[in-house]
Length: 149
Image 1 (spheres, rainbow, N blue to C red):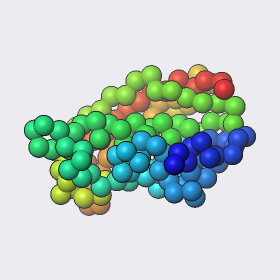
Image 2: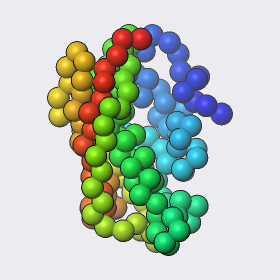
Image 3: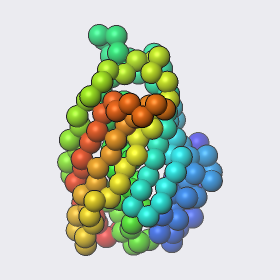
Image 4: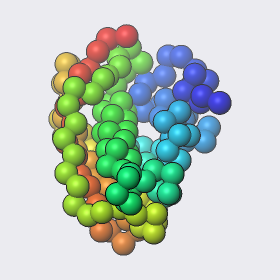
């Protein structure tokens, strides 16, 4: 089931995200990679997931795309939380730094995104990916294009 398609129209970005959490917190990509939107605020969004063997790469660790997807989601939703009902966004650039290898034994990871600045046309956001002990596994910066719907 695609929760995003079930959201009522006319909601601000923050209202949409809060409703998504209320409805279960999993956008379609979250179903695929088993992570959920767990917290939002003005200019802030957090996703959590537990990587499994399903997201391993050929060399025996969690694929970098898993971390990048959580970070991109946190950045995008942090920006989305600042948008009106008549705005949308798309990622222009995502720069990811990998600090530590992730395995299925890492446990729960939390990606937190925060808006650094947002204007009429662009948003600049940063995010971190940490475990329950606060160890940093990856970080990202993102530039997003703000668009009229």
